[in-house]
Every structure is written in structure tokens, then in C-alpha cells.
Image (cartoon, rainbow, N blue to C red; front, top):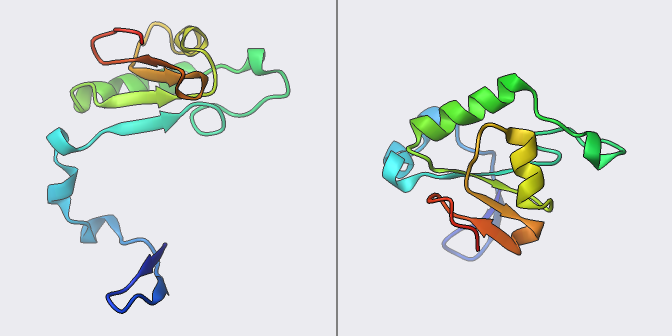
Length: 110
């Protein structure tokens, strides 16, 4: 991770181990997960219409959303309808079409 010290010099340091993080910053009311779909949650494929998310990953996303009181959102270049199809029956807040479409935690699409 690159950074800048107090003198304005650029530094390069490895990420801190989880044990060394300030866990007060990771309180549930201060933490949210924004997860990219293609290439992160699901593998890239030559034919984008054949991409799917295995049941195990859908269950894990649902568990994460439950554990964080719904503070999980999917970000994608795909339309939200495509994301919903691949995550069904899970329906999470999402940003689709590179942010042109958005659905909030109440299910309202903008």
C-alpha cells in the first residue's frame, strides 16, 4: 500500500495484519461491503450470459448481509435485473450499469 508520511514523502508498506487493525473502525454501524460482481464474485466467461454464482456463494452473501444488518451491496456493469437473476432468490442493494441504476436497502430503484 502506498502512502505519504508527515514530511510528504511517499512510502510503501504492506497492509496491516487483521490483528493490528483498529477494530473500532469496523463496528457494524460503520462498516459496509460493496462487492464487484464480474471477476470478483463470479468468474469472467467468454459469453457473459453464461455467468452464474454457485449456491454456496449465494448462501455466503446472504449470511454476510444478515450478519451486517443488510450492509452488503453488489456493484456491476450489468443491469440490476441481470444481477437479481444470478443471485436469486437473494435480492441485495445494488448499483448496476456502472452506477446508472441503483437499488437501495429498502428495495427502491433509482
